[in-house]
Length: 120
Image (cartoon, rainbow, N blue to C red):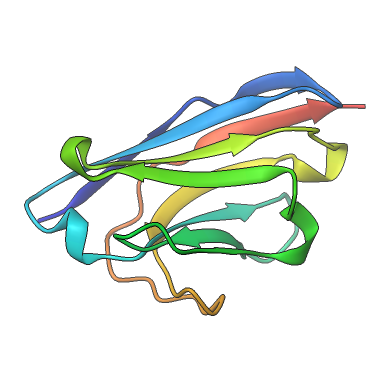
């Protein structure tokens, strides 16, 4: 069974950067469109970005131009480079499968997530 392990979160000042990683175990990582989700306290989960095997991407409007999703299929890893961070980016970030049209398509067990806190 696939397992997802997110890392790279932390405390950063507004305007700073972080790079999140999500390592997937299992043999079929390359067949999935992978994405990043986030959930802030008291808010619903939000689908942030997605990438398919060949590198086509999707971003929700609030992160366009600031976040970059990438993947290394040889390492079964997907990344989220986050620049120009804002306080409203504070959330727990999770990876899972998704759709390039922004549709949430959760097909794998959730990992523990990684906390990102942006101080204003």
